[in-house]
Length: 79
Ligand SMILES: [Zn+2]
Image 1 (spheres, rainbow, N blue to C red):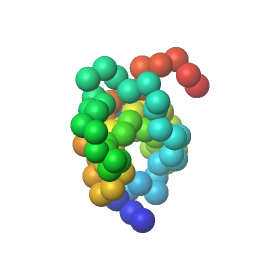
Image 2: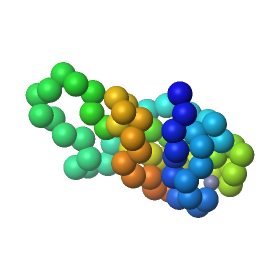
Image 3: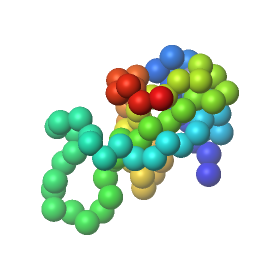
Image 4: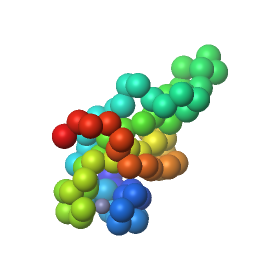
């Protein structure tokens, strides 16, 4: 699968430039909706731009469509 991911520093790049870091379980307040639906909604994930700025950032992605809704700089101090 291939889709575009927007790096907060470099802009839109092919997902092959990034490394997936897994879902962020502690989503920012107000971003996770509990509608009672069983369908998976957008989730926050960590991504590492290995072929670009080599920084971690967070992306909110619709796991059903691979649509990236928003991205932001990683603010936690994890390496
Ligand atoms: Zn980048």
